Image 1 (cartoon, rainbow, N blue to C red):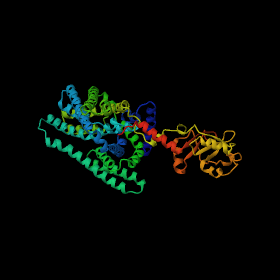
Image 2: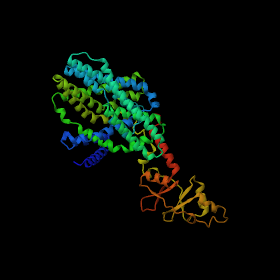
Image 3: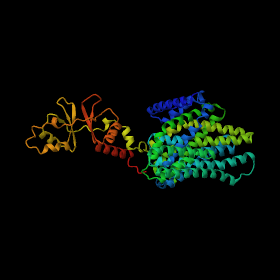
Image 4: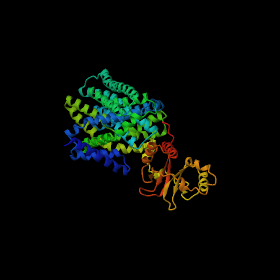
Amino acid sequence: MNMLLVIGLIILLGSVSGRIFKRLNLPQITGYIITGLLLGKTFNGFLRGEMMDSFEPLLNLALGIIGFMIGSEIRLDKFRRYSKSIYTILFCESFLTFVLVGGATMLLTGKLYMGLILGALASATAPAATYSVLGEYKARGPVTTTTLSIVALDDALALLIYGFASVFARSLILHDTPSIIRTIAIPLSQIAVSVGVGAAAGYALHKISFKARDRDRILPFALGTIILVVGIALYFKVDPILASMTLGGVVSNLQPKDNREMFDVIKKFSPPIFILFFVLVGARLDATILAKGGVFLLAIVYIISRSVGKLAGAYIGGKISNAESTVTKYLGFCLFDQAGVAVGLSIAVFNMFTIIGGEAGKAGILILSIITATTFILQLIAPTMIKYGIKKADEVNRNVTEEDIIDSNMISDVMGEDFFLIKENNNLHQIIDIMKNSESYNFPVVSMAGEFVGIISLGEMRDTFHEEQMDTLVLAGDLVKNVDTVVYATQDLRTAIDIFKQEGVDYIPVLEKKGSTKLVGQLEYRKVKDYLTKEVLMRQGGLAV
């Protein structure tokens, strides 16, 4: 099938499903994943086999962008503020999840090595869906900051836990003595390479962007660096998302706090990539695996024990570190997602156990099946749980900017409707009386029939003030200035903002609709800017994070 045709179809269908789920008050990402599920292997769709393999570069690019954007949120000034609670919660939720899932698995299967492996895999939290939901609902606050910090660090800790668990599990199967040095060295070296690649590239990107005078080159520089970092990470067989997180974090901390241009252009570029990514994630899920013997029961036990571990671990960690009450109560709901790292490590376990053979080979198939099945369920549950957590913490729609306010308003929402009106037959004396009662600089003029004909400004009246005995002879119709620039109440506010900036005007009359001459309001640039500033502060709720 034509690859461009498939990509276009995926993005369009994903966009439609996301829109539908948004109208249902559900996260859009759920719609993307379900679209992929319908097009993928579960329902024997066209997104399977070799077709899916061809999308691997795009999936890696999406992971790189997600990692870069998560890293951009991890600024040291924020991190220092929450660092104690972040590390405490990270260790508590990871290790409690490891213990609970491991213990439940061991009780159900009677095998310690199964508990060690599944417990280790359960400790990982996937950043992709987490970041996407937080971005969709424009979350901002202590819970959001702590969540982003934890998912940024979680991969590294999960690799360390898995490193120990896999070595001991292998030793239990083979009845040999585990190598402690090898256990520690392998995951630490992988983390060091990922961080080193990301940090070096981040420093280089900062220097390049600082010297680049052509702002149009920011996107290709940033995107090219992300792709390069992901490529190098894959070449060295280390975690690409950890490398790209480091890249974003280094750039974010080296650049001034108010300089977000690089991250803004990547954010505007990324929505189609994200839609493609999550549709393909859904296509890879296989719901039929739940029907296999023993998988369904173990999957349910895994999900329950993992969920309890994340919720209880975040709560206990929050209490120990005296974190804010919202973090203690609701952070755990933001840590449900499971994907990339857990799936990747389960494949590594499958390969390792297959080589050993015998009982281990069967265990490898079961572990891969459990992680695949639980990932399918958690990918559907996690977005709603994340939304619940940030909503209960009152952090939804806190991370808004003036651009967000502009894009969400119509002109009719912002225009001034209480204004002084001058009729074209008003004489100079009457006009002056009207102007005395207003602080405005521009005044709209209408005909006797109420049709808009133009404006009178204070500056244009100066020439008439020195004339004696003219107050009854000069009428508004003699002073009115025709206005070529008008807007309509039904247009987006963005239209008016563009006119203010491009034409350098500070006043725009608002007519009822296109083709009408009925004046229904006015826009003054100063008042519109005041409205935007107040609206941003009000929606952010004064949260200084």
